[in-house]
Image (cartoon, one colour):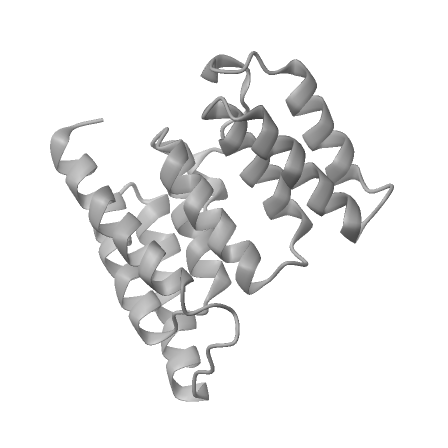
Length: 167
């Protein structure tokens, strides 16, 4: 990862921390939500075209318009996973789960980022939280397998999402 990308990520991490303190109770007007949805579509197109810097800039606009937009944090987390910035991925996905704790797929992604960071305890806690949503769902099996198969501290056993999955 180059220094320019690292500095940009530091700003995004600061934004995540600030916005996540607002929590899921933040209410936005329909106008801002519509703006955020339209901009999020642009972010996905830019990211899929390989324009990640522009995509990140648009994400800042989306989050400014709608700081409780879980989808924006999901995209940010997935982009961070592709960049192998697992700390930012864990923060972004964790924030998305605070906003929408019913997204079972995000528990798997969060667990994978925690595994990549070498934090088996956090990944197990994420699996515990997921098991409160569903006791026999496929996501539990996927996360359980990822934890079992991971060599903590080694990123080679973590399935990283492809750039096109940042939707």
